[in-house]
Length: 201
Image (tube, rainbow, N blue to C red; front, side, top):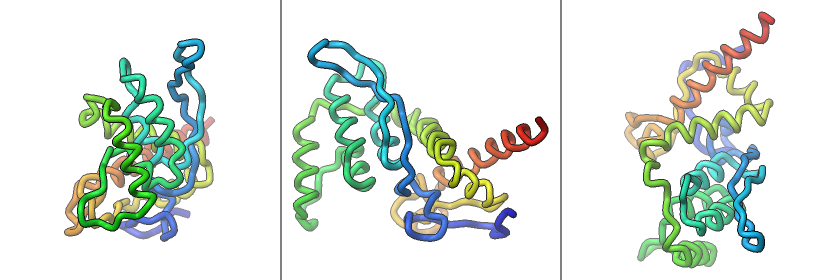
């Protein structure tokens, strides 16, 4: 039975409806470009990404004619120990002066500084919404238990309850664009159509 809540807000993976957030521990397989330096050939390999955040950030650096070091950087994002670290690497964001200098954060700074020639997709801003949608498709079709949970939200409005992000979430004043929630609702409707078509067959 679909849940009756008219609005469902989510943010952290350990909270109710945490499966909707990009940090939730639901792995995704994705065919990833690789380079064999010994044979000097490019190839693809299906690799596991720990979360949708890992895959989304990695895809920022996967595009035609990308610098070769991008593939090394993609692997660093893919194997990051937490989705938060994958996000920092994806943003190529150095720690700011005056913030706590944790060892793990300084190590990420060194990784980012080591690859100044790594460049994100120049068309990323135009493509990032569709890339996120593709990542969500992979997440929810490869993890059937949360696909069922998504469908069980019925017609509820889904909102990422982030106080810091008014693009993907609703922001501090709750008026943000909520693109993650909107993409999840778009996917939910497409899954419903597939489910209904399968039931008819």
